[in-house]
Length: 200
Image (cartoon, rainbow, N blue to C red):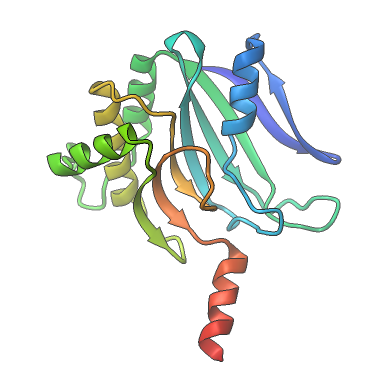
């Protein structure tokens, strides 16, 4: 897949730089989907990386690789994100997912997921519902098994040509625009609030 855009935080906000002559419609789609949805007062966990995929015009797809950095904005809020967005055909997306999928801890590269999971996710997406694989407070130190399973699920749905508006390997906020989600990760504020509740 070819690099089509970069998103960085500059001075007073995020900016998108097109690197491959994006159409106006696709530029808008990339702008609204390449970074995960966040609450105005929440901060994503530093160091998290995630992948977000969504369709563009003409049957093309975009794959956004996002990193949460330790950089701060002008108000001192930490956790600014950066994204490199690549575009290509559905086949190119499948190849990119296969090449970037981590090997599970047991070394099994031919990971198979239960057919019922694929069917359940497909029906939920067709009904325009959101699909989560897991919800955790703290990102596990070793996420290879989960990421490999999520990649396998996404690839299966793409091969079956199930219509859906995108996927994200990690989400931080309930209103994320992309319906197929891997780990639903709590923000630092949410985890802190839970800790305060337990202390009461």
